[in-house]
Length: 174
Length: 183
Figure 1 (cartoon, one colour):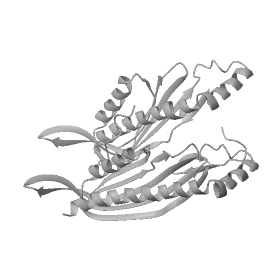
Figure 2 (cartoon, helix red, strand yellow):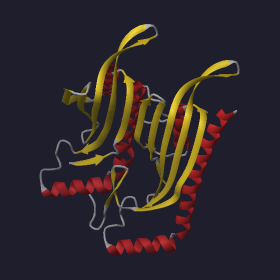
Figure 3 (tube, chains in turn blue, green):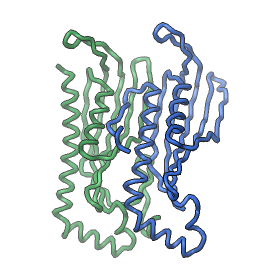
Figure 4 (spheres, rainbow over the protein chains, first blue to last red):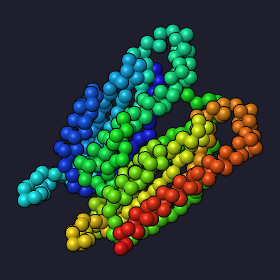
């Protein structure tokens, strides 16, 4: 069983945004693409200076093949989150105002069923298999694919937050 | 797994194995103040990475809404494998200050643009032996250096040239894009 870590992507934002839209859009994207989704951490505590501090962790995975599994772990951290009402196109809308950081961590897990883990010989063979036989597939297909999936999700988050530097020319990659 | 003798270094929060990393372009700067479209600028860069066959890597995207306009900071590090031995990495740090949305009239049409200040810093790196195949033993390191310095000298020089050319082309593309908004 090996883990191939991909670079962490970070979004930091301070301003007004729709938390519900962000939450739903990102979750829908994961579920639509067949990811098993769970939220192991949801902490929300009031700040004496005003607003709330939230810590949310999402863990999602998808079995890409019988051997590889894609993991996407997202950490949301908000500070001074307040509910506010804004008027958009003449209608009142509930929004949030906060300082927020989102970390997108991802990795490819190999031999997630642990089938090559049953004897020292199989462990040695697995090492050989991953280092020399399927190395190009790991580098050029699986890690690349997951990385571009994460970039797509990253872009959805930027669009929901209404950030300026958004969009991608790599939409058709994978 | 890392072999004996190889080191780990932290570059922009990413732990990477110690390959030979040479800085070819050192802090090429670009500053602009005036009208432009932030999203179009971002997409122009993205398009350039795609056209030049770079893999995109966006490490940080920071946006703060402030009373005097938005503050935006982007850290990007696109990379491209040239061979199984060498790869190019471009480090781009972008800071935008006091970004406001303005409406201007262009060809009798109202267009929404941004106004503010941009500072960009580009660094270009040539990374050799990125798979750390020659890092395992001191004899490998010695042999690699001999190859790099004497046998592959011509190739290494060509790769270095490609790093400067790509960084300079990206810089020119962004300059031309920004200059369009001056007139």
